[in-house]
Amino acid sequence: MIVIRTPDELKTALAGASVTIGNFDGVHKGHQALIKRTCVKATASGLTSAIVTFDPHPLRVLTERKTPPFITLTDQKLELISQFGPQVALVLAFTREMAALSPEQFVQHYLVDGLNMKELTIGYDYHMGKGRTGDHAMLTQIGDRLGFGVERLDPVALEGAIVSSTRIRDLVEAGDVWDARPLLGRFYQVSGEVVHGMKRGGKLLGFPTANLKLVDELFPKPGVYAVWVEVDGQAHEGVANIGKNPTFGNDALSVEAHILDYDKDIYGRDIRVHFVQRIRDERKFNGIDELKERIRRDVGIGRQILARPEGRIKITQPSIEDTAQ
Image (cartoon, rainbow, N blue to C red):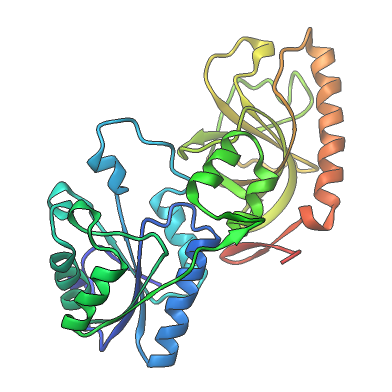
């Protein structure tokens, strides 16, 4: 997948493009349906499949209130999108000036002139342009004038509820990472560089941990989780703690992953932690021995969870898929 920031970066003009557009926060099952449909239509019509998204998220530009944490930052979002086969991703720098464009101005400049769009696929609730007036009906009218077709997909629903970024965010923040998995089509994940922590895990407790330098925005509810830890494209069983280590009186949030049966030095390396299931709340223990015994129990529970077929994953570069799919 070619990633561009302006259509001018394309070395040759597109003969025609099948396009979908959105924020795609989380690249969940609903987003995946849009991307897959766009690629199918491109193949059938001999067009280039193109995804258009924004950085920063429009909410960061248009609202003065604190925005909710996003599920995927831009780099991870693009990595996930690439797994579904689009040929081009146009990442537009969202500004107030862009927000002031009418739907027709935006479509004409970026999609028709920029990408030579012939087909547009949108979600059931998609709106664009000034005042969010560019709905399905208006875009269809614009398409009739400018020479492209518009298809609106129905929402993707699981267990009677529409798959949405808000629903996934609520589940993750509540610690219900197991229930977020079917909506995402994967386990919820965070990435980061392994940095030196307080050096208590191995020397004091007998359970060395990889401490992540936090760059993601959305983290599961503090507690202990069964996880898969991805190092250099290999998945390793693990147990992770999210929280402030109340037994030691810490104040800062940390993510620490104990990789089971693993003794390699990974300081300075980037790893990915996939959250499978919550084991327990974080709590304060009366002493080191009580904490060590509880960690031993957590590791045993984690092994049981990760041994189940539905709790396992396999690495298929560059993506991570669930073996139950």
